[in-house]
Image (cartoon, rainbow, N blue to C red):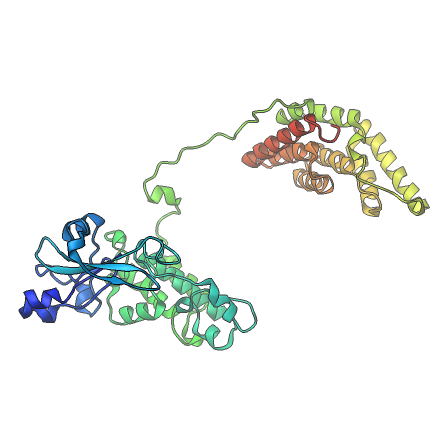
Length: 411
């Protein structure tokens, strides 16, 4: 739906004809008693938004008697005459539902900020931006991205933060050259910055957005300018907005856990060791299919290394078990998720949680739906004080165990 001043106004108030210019989309020049603001003073048109209730009242609820014209092949519409409470005449264009390909295109009256179709116009099929207005000028010329291009992009981000809206850099430069700093600044920031700070940051944004790359500051210059302005300690965004944050306790598994799951939830490494010894290599079935030709001397040596690792693991000689299992893994002919799980536990018992996590993830890579791999990751993550991630892994493992009980691969 659109709204503009019509020719009715010229007939009713001929002496005021010079005041009126046509606008669109819920827009109208300010009432006669409206004082022009700074934006109007420098030539930027001022707009007002009208609610649907206002437009209904002006057109007598879109009465057929108020219809001026109907038509539009590409976008069927009806134009109504209307009169506001201040006695000013307007014309309202009402589009049929789904008259446009995207009915929400004009929902807020904002222009489209980017267009995915611009990507295919790139010289090499790759795109740096989907909006030419915010693209570094040199990229438009030669399609190259340089460090100076990144500084330009930083300038657009800085401009967005300062203004609270999207302003094409070329327009912003015109505003900043005119020393209209207050027009650039977001009104919500009023009273929260000094004139000196605003001048420094606006000036920096202006330098970043210079047309010639050589005129833009370096990253060192950016840091040198912004660091002195950091007078307050970092605070999270919810604190700046005055929103209270509710701490959520890590979720606990809703499903019953297996003995291994219970041991992992208690971080009982001794119980985990006993269960892995009891399970032996039952879960490795089907992860390796060896041909007759693979039964070489190297293969026999590899299995011998694993055997020694199993003996050391059973006897709780965890450093020796790590060495033997590493020999088995390094050969690479045979991949065993159980070996990774066992070596993961050995690393935990040797106070190496990072290595333990890597092995648990390797076990998952070999056997994606293996609950043990997720349980071992949970323990390693908890050792690394990543408790939320540990809880997520625990829940994932419990879910996989539940699936297995309903007919999956043997546990």
